[in-house]
Length: 148
Image 1 (cartoon, helix red, strand yellow):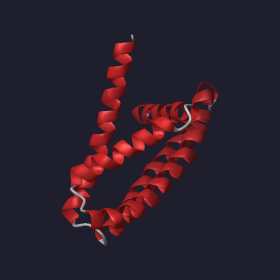
Image 2 (cartoon, helix red, strand yellow):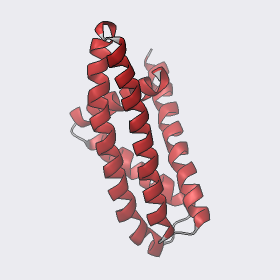
Image 3 (cartoon, one colour):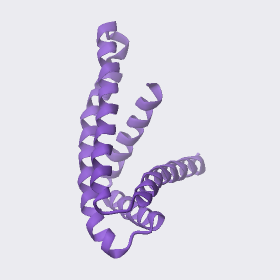
Image 4 (cartoon, helix red, strand yellow):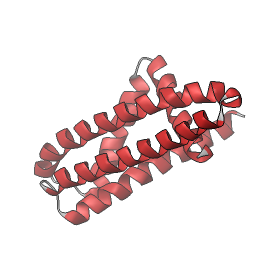
């Protein structure tokens, strides 16, 4: 739970920092992600034309889901020491519901992707998304280490 909490806070901080800089970094990051995924799964131009609008729709839904949950996490972090056991239990339950909602959304997305892409490319997509996140984290750690 703590790991999930830290990861979500990291992405929230990243989004706030990126948004505060006029969105330019966010645009660059999004462009890099599109290029990375396109290369990793070998999208043809015909596939890309159909795929990206569907991917972007589900990505927007995923972001909205995370944004709602992040607000709850931030409040819980500020109040954690004074929260009752019942409130902590509710937080845990909400965390599990959030994770389940993410999985359900991913299932819906995969079903839509099957209408556009071969199953192997969908598997490559799921891997490419994780690999891109790992690259971003690696680059952020590297940059942070160089700044120290």
